[in-house]
Image 1 (tube, rainbow, N blue to C red):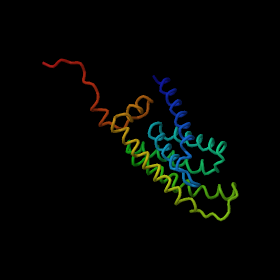
Image 2: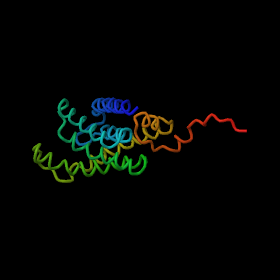
Image 3: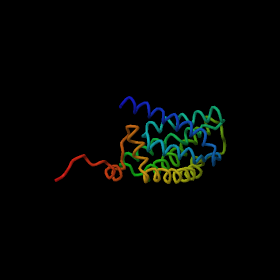
Image 4: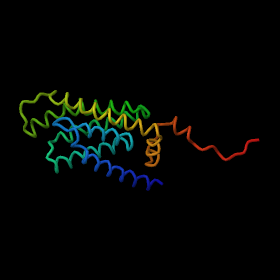
Length: 189
């Protein structure tokens, strides 16, 4: 089972990376990529913070190489991806904390750290430390809202817990998981 769940995690990661590359151009303007934030949060909830970090890095690098996206593809994703997964786990599965982690990690930390990358390495002029903060926060709020609706729907129909269980991840949706467990086959007299 352990070997099977590791393989399933890798397959899920590959599918999420592929989906992230394909849907990232949707609603995208420079400095704002809501669908990348959607992917970060979904991956963080389903696979955890370290898989989410790997996912965000792979998507960012692929987008930079094949779509000509600047380094914002990485700086605007990795911090939120990790913080989203960490806060989701620390809060014992509260989806809103996954969204808050993405907003803080990408919208603030990633946005501020994008300034030196874009100025000193990429050569953009006329930027300030807070230049990317408004667009990054707006992108995380849009992507976070979509992710919240999607994951809440999955949770409501018991799919989120089933996916997490199948992947060997910690399942936090105990109310649904406990209520749906089969009763032992005992005859009571």
